[in-house]
Image 1 (cartoon, each protein chain N blue to C red):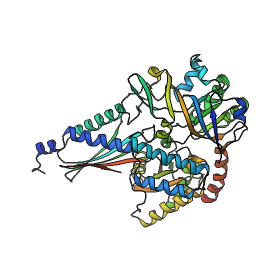
Image 2 (image 1 turned 60 degrees about the vertical axis):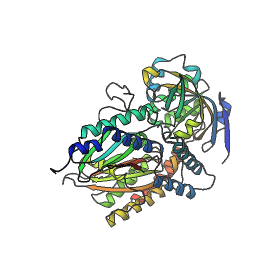
Image 3 (image 1 turned 180 degrees about the vertical axis):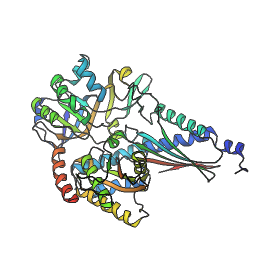
Image 4 (image 1 turned 120 degrees about the vertical axis):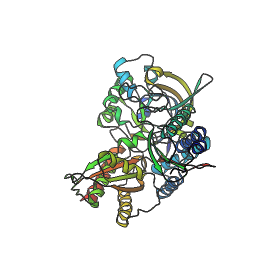
Length: 304
Length: 193
């Protein structure tokens, strides 16, 4: 570690490059729906009855996605809570990276890529620039690589409001502390959400942890690619079974009835106390906005 | 699936003809109002905003807007979740003679009763499709309480053309949200038993 050239490192990852990277990451997240999500919506469109209201809704969604990407305008006017995970090499200062994120966020707001979306909970005053206590939300991790990697999700409020947390066992659902208990809570949460989370959504689930880390685990699952497989075979089976069962509820796009209520289900785990067994269900709307940033010595690239 | 075109001001007779599941393209003038706005109009009874609500349409929306050369332009303007306005909406409909509410997610029995009693409907706009909806807003005609309430919460008066919505709560006591909740509940009970 002693041979790290701090001066050079700070020059390579200078403020301007960082700000450019984060700005473009925010812009892509807000205006360009990830391809895996768009593909899943296309599939859902083909699975709805011809000329039904549900198919019409999915057509509107697909038209909207094209329009937003073409003109670089927000997919949804609720440009969400900004959840950043930033991995950076030893030798860089978090404060400097944070400043670049904040300034990029302010610039994106000024350019109407973001709505002023951050309200002081005590005074009700909108900060006007998306900056405030715990906003944007940045999770820093120092790592052993020599480049910066950033994951960003814009998490909308409508879907956040229908997210839910359960403490197992739950006698009403007859849900015990096992995977079948988890299954029951997820079905309950999605049933209660109906169309209000802007279905068809994506469901991130966190099992274990304390109440806080449980929800973080759930949201971290939303960064996964929709078509990936869970590394644990039993959990993988449950993810796919849940997706099928939720769609059997026929809540459908926007809750108008139909064959697709969710586009994916992803489950993650955290260790828990013997006394606690939390299941957290993070509902993500169809406008599942995420973008991944890589800043190396020579290059800045973003994909989603 | 037939598409019905409606232009503001809308009469009670036109509204009574609508049924749940109807796809409607709205043209004319609509006004936005969400959380703070509902509280405001029920506490302050503003006479300058009232004419836009009379036989008019209230849109639960906090838009993304841009001001260029002194002129406001809408960039993205999709619906927000309506159920938060449930405590106010029936009184708002009664006092201001509203014919339609646009939002997402549907509303509760209190609002459903008011729709039936006063002759109004709930129009559901596609959540998250804000770029598309923004493109249907041709002009910003006015804005009220921008300074006090901020961009998302202010009252924006829009001229719209062929703004797509679905009737999910009609003036005959029917609610698509209720129907789907009941049908999905049966399957839900089977799945967890």
